[in-house]
Image 1 (cartoon, one colour):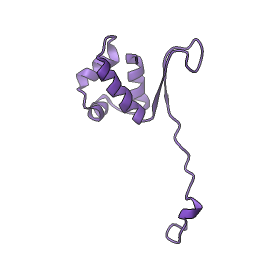
Image 2 (cartoon, one colour):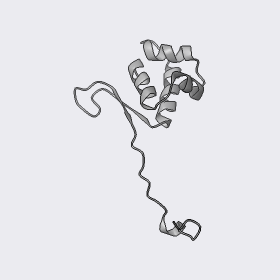
Image 3 (tube, one colour):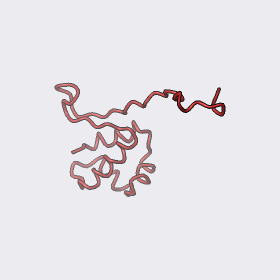
Image 4 (cartoon, one colour):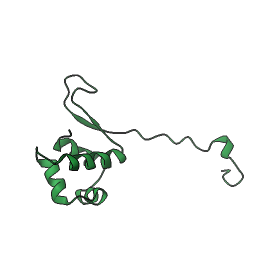
Length: 96
């Protein structure tokens, strides 16, 4: 289960305000504030937040997942590099 700190960090790393996350999840700002600050949060709320933030590229790490002895964490997924136009898609219209 995600912690409030992970949820708050995930929102920040995704560059979302609390209002934007509320709009993206359909949750009230009160529910988001509670999720970010309380220890007892409805699991359905946490799951909705997790799915929404993961869709924005946030990766949640369990305690010790990438570093033994480290606590739970948050990362931003690396974006795929632009590989340009594939040879089979080249044409005079996109010849630069």
